[in-house]
Image 1 (cartoon, rainbow, N blue to C red):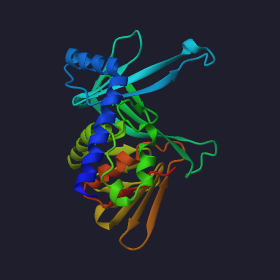
Image 2: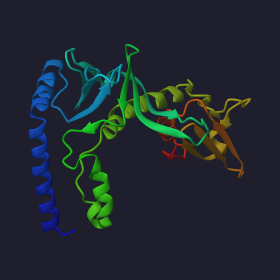
Image 3: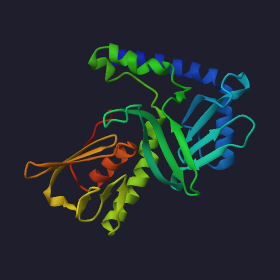
Image 4: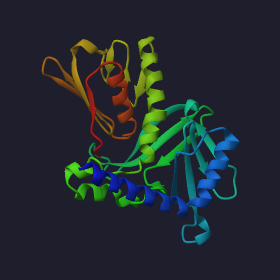
Length: 265
């Protein structure tokens, strides 16, 4: 893309972001106020989704939940109740959340978002359908980028989704602690798969598959394929819980293993 074209695109994008901020001006001001009161810093983004409480046919059972993102964490905001902060440093666990489809087969999972565990054992659900209130393109931004030429798409400005922030902040911190734990001699478990200082242990393994014998590890929701240096492989499948395997992949990479994750249910 030519520099002048990129400049025009950026200028148009910034105008549209400004318009999006105007549409959410009240929530932006509230996010600034909440950030000051809780010491969370300046807001990085505003996200929202419609929550439905039983009975679903009643309009009063619907409300908009807002999620304010800050450098120091997230804050959930519901009408009529105090804001609920979750600081990044207080997150003790995080998993990418998948639920089984009706068939419950190994290849049948639906992505739901992230589950964060705070220090007080509170579980915070960050649903995948949170919409970015500051995204001028709305949910179709990625679709628009896919329609333009590749050289334009590479420079196509998009407001980052909440999943990126969670990955950079919460997941990175949790994985770093898990790496330290394994190197210190402890075991990290994901479903029936255990990661130990000696290697990877499956649910029916008598012992660990040594790191030196592992060529690479391929992961999907609910499935781990360990490819060995001798050409053989071992597959571990969890038909009940497909969550957390993206985070497990990052742990393996942090330990120096060749690992890849395919987000395909």
